[in-house]
Length: 182
Image 1 (cartoon, rainbow, N blue to C red):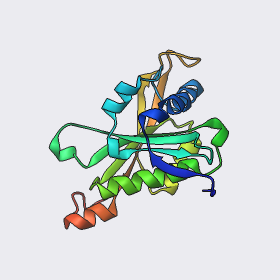
Image 2: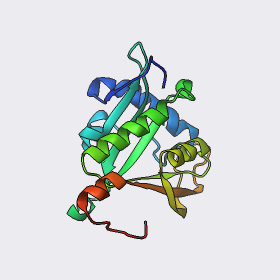
Image 3: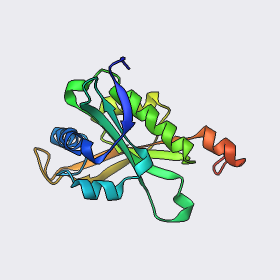
């Protein structure tokens, strides 16, 4: 990461730029099944406050963002989150994604979260490489999991690759490994 980039907590004031970056990802057809961006209130309600980060340029503009959501309301899954990470097209190749993913891993481990997961389209090779470099492993392929509803791929069934990263730090603090085969 260059000296002009800084990380910080995502705040409501960042939403217009975060939303624009999200919309650019949606437009690619290879970032999400979502057809439109949510409102700030919907985004805020669905993502954990301590695990929403932005990467800012020297002038304070948002270059990318990462956010985590709980996968379940059940207490047994309190340590499992699903995340999203988006980088502005103009900021590609500047280390923004790497910095955001590292910050998300830091914040989740500090909170006792033991698993971060994500689903990535197979065509999104940049995201797959980023996640693998950060210690994520492929859990499986979800074949024809859902269909695109808009854009040039509307009506097409899509596969996703399910990735996860287990925290060795959080597991070592608990004294037991819930899955000794992992």
